Image 1: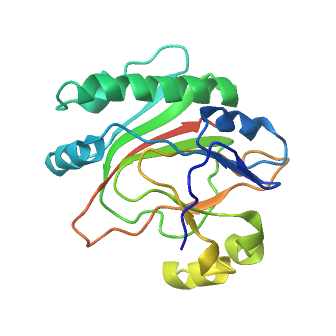
Image 2: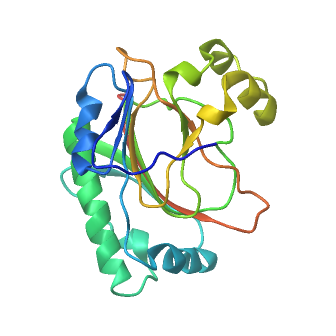
Amino acid sequence: MRSIGATAAPSASPAWRVSALPSVLDEILVPSVNLTCWQRAIPSGTAASLAEWASLGGAPFEATLSAGRYNLAPAVLGLQEPLRSWLLMDMAGLLGRFVCLAGADRLRLSFGAVRNDRCRKFHVDYHRYRLITTYAGQGTEWLPNEAVCREALNHPSDCPCDANKEIVRDPGSVHRARAGDVLLMKGAGYDSVLGAVHRSPPIEGSGGARVVLVASTVNPS
């Protein structure tokens, strides 16, 4: 497994973009691109403080929100200043950018501690767009298109380990986002390009937790 080093110049391929510049997220609007990653540093001590907060907390905050008006304060109950204010400002900025790029009028939001392996299989989301940021713990893992066996992806084995072996052509091609990185991905709801393939890193049984922000477009009913 490898990480992509942060650089001011974008790393590019026909389907993905990675850069230390926030403007890389705008590249998701390129028709052929299904994943963008903004590699960024978060304030020192943030991950450790959030990991401690997660150890005392319960289930993540989840809600479907109007893109024009939402209150994020309930998601960060129990956090102390100045981390609370920074996190609210950071999440509001990311969600504002997400809403603009996705053209969404509603979004599905989840924020908080994750302790299980509910997404161990590599998969494509059933949304048009999804944004994921891990503030503490291991980041989301993703695959370039050329590293995916789409036939196995569409008909995976029941066992996650077997499914991943069939889906991933080369284990060395798996990329992992770092704490603070922002992933913006197209999913299966985006008809003109194959959705980005990714998974949550397996942590169940390790005693650890991840603190993750996930925002998704709401599919029409």
